[in-house]
Amino acid sequence: MSFIKTKGFVIQSIAYRDSNRLLKILTPEHGLITCSAQGAKSKKSTLRIASSPFVFAEYELFYYRERYRVQAANVIDAFLPLMEDIKRLTCISHLAELVLDVLRDNSKGKTSYPFWAYASYKITTDQDPVLVTNLAQLKYLSEQGFAPWIDNCLICGKDFSEEGARFYFAKYGAICEQDSCRKNIGSSVILDLSLGSLAALMYLIHNPYEKCFNMHLSEKIRREIINFSERYLTYVMEKDYQKLDMIKSLENFERGNI
Image (cartoon, rainbow, N blue to C red):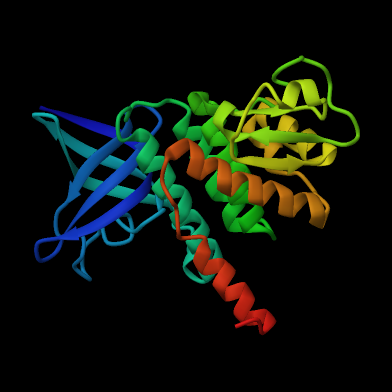
């Protein structure tokens, strides 16, 4: 048995029994850990806020027989703007689902903690949380070894012309406009990408977190990136993520399309 002190983000908070919570906490040293927070649902509990979803805090944990229990916690940032904005809350909930899926088989993934720190902050503060979320999930997949090949043509290796490229999801890569390259791929789910979108994706993949979420894109390229990000996520993870669909429904309602 031992006592551990660590900072961490609550990625998931699940109520169980009468007043307890089960927390998934993303930490820098131990990766994603599962902790019990006894009595945390009680209004008088000192752990009530620190066991809320997406809170950033310093935790004192009791560790015994591969189980963690929260003994005390000091909240560093409660990320209150998330709870006041349905769009931001939906975005970060979606990203949390992705992180939990990725870490299910590798809870010690070391890149996840700094990624979450940057991504959650930008989703909370940026004027376009939907774009940030789509950029973030592409960056995260790339960090996990699923970076799309968009530097040059997957077949001939040549740079792309002003016509852009055609992305073949089955090959995780982009192909130039030459017929000789395209007919070598065969049938596949495809998506056309403009040269501007390719440049934005390359910048995202090859730059550190503190730079890659600060891009200012035209509306056309923004739409292309979001469309590509959504389809690429579904293809790589073999799962249909649906939380962001609620934002689309809300935006359509606001425009009077529903």
